[in-house]
Image (cartoon, rainbow, N blue to C red; front, top):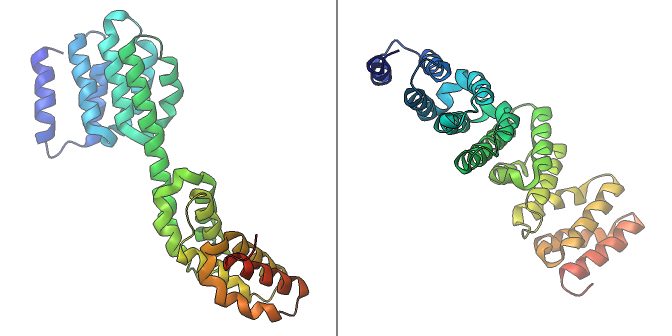
Length: 262
């Protein structure tokens, strides 16, 4: 491919209404892998794939393969451009992370590019996963909502972006989903002050028919101390609970919430 033909490809591609992103990405990656093409043109092709970002998903596998083949010192600029393209493609190129790790130690610039691309791939993938799970919290299916809440809790602080959606799930009509949302928020924000919504969601189980559930709920509120002040009035009726352990725990919880206990 001559330099003129290559430049025409780059300049004309965006103007072709009938040419898909996949077709363009395949053409560009074909330039990247062709050793007969001048290196500077291969670099420009890789940079164009970076500009396409997620639209260049079909090129991810070939870019990864090229990175394992490009090792000559005179190809450092091309290696760096390929690394950057993989990072720009995002989650679809996550499988390239091990290959990126093996590319370290070549040059400082390549190492920096690898570090940035790896961070981008892992962060983008996690963000996408959290966003998908957050959407699932609004599913009509209780099982889907429950699995989403539990999975988000397992991601801990990495699922911080889902806090608003989990907070909304505190009002879920399904008790298991509500409890999973409570647990997820506590794991995602372990040091945050409990919100009024969280305290009220926990307090719902004070009226559960199972004394074991009531007891666990009373103790959970008691551990929150003054942060559970909104639940104080809701605990008062449990001082007359049929279960002795619940009555005793309620008294202790009220004392802690009012600041009079340990």
